[in-house]
Image (cartoon, rainbow, N blue to C red):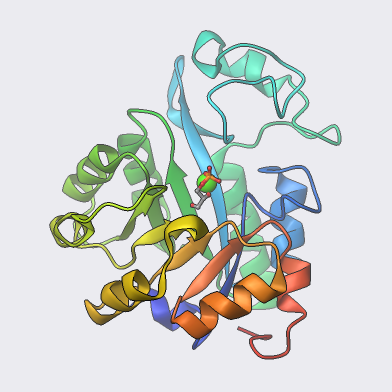
Length: 248
Ligand code: G3P
Ligand code: CA
């Protein structure tokens, strides 16, 4: 079995956050395309389940439609057909996870590059359709993460060997027990809680540490020097311009 590190930059990985959210409307196909063109070795997105199409996962950050689409109200109150008629920015539809997979497969055959897909489970009942997605796409290197550790537990039961990472917005002293229980490969932190001693402890325990959301080069450099494995960024153009980790 290959390790996630085999797909990433040797010492620091620039991850396209919601595609390239600072450059192109977040979580849209052109955003993911931009992150791939910029050379991100991993792209991140968020998924929700749709009430009337249980096998489909919708790529959207919020549970509500108002901030990023032409719609309003909760995703849960709409059918897939209604959701797919909305404008997610720049005239783009809200993508399905399956469409992002197609983009990655096409990128791999065109550019010869394998890109890790980081799927963040948002909302409940996302573990099962994501596990089905993983089973349909054994060719895609996939990292599954979530703030909802119960969803990751459910995912782990369905997919015993995939890469998973618990996310933390606030520090939790029990992170190691959680990571061990999940057989995680990484522990992902907000930059607000990524202190040198915590990063050192997580790395020493054998886990990667990916930190969100970092849009300034000086912050990325500081985190790299701290031992962080990589950062999620809305501005992969800016961070990839640093020659010290270009080409990863
Ligand atoms: O996975 C890192 C980051 O995306 C988590 O925060 O709110 O941007 O989904 P958020
Ligand atoms: Ca996310």
